[in-house]
Image 1 (cartoon, rainbow over the protein chains, first blue to last red):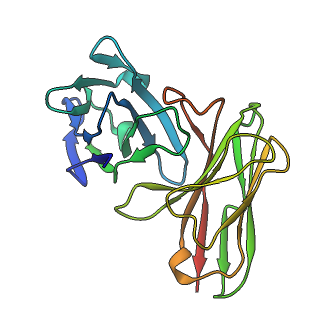
Image 2: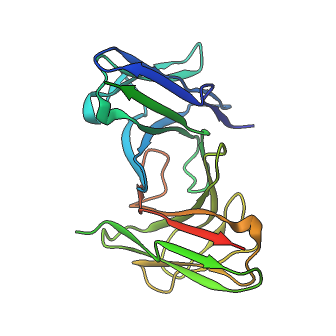
Length: 114
Length: 114
């Protein structure tokens, strides 16, 4: 069965330090992977996606994610965290060209302390 | 360009009452979606539409109905609300339903069923 796991409910990082938000997936086929961010009382906003090609994907607000097929992971990273990065982050996977086949992870709350 | 908007922002219902949530998009997108977000569960797809006049069931459709009479609007109805439907509801749209397509989300409707 297709699934996405975000093993950490919360990640705490000091401002200026690098951050990683983990995501692993389980699909039978080639995945299309997405990261979304949700700020308080707002809808989800698209950050970046992996479709094919270079395993390192760059997105909005200085975020990037690395696709690792052997480890079935798509971790979100940023070299230097900002307090404004504090939000809820969702990983998602789609497999086929089907509007219903998108699975979201449970979310990871990122907290950046000054 | 307002993107995706949702009405109302917040609503309290008593068990057994009915209501309709409205989603509107001004991006001329073909596909529209309704999700619910519950703590620790990410987003789950309720219903979706691949174009005007069409609707289809998602992952958790029971207790909900939808209609897409106009391309820009997607309505979610609760005929007889239950406490289990207390949640935050998000509408989203995309230009197509392919796996690579990014979804754009509305700000959400917080529903409390007493």
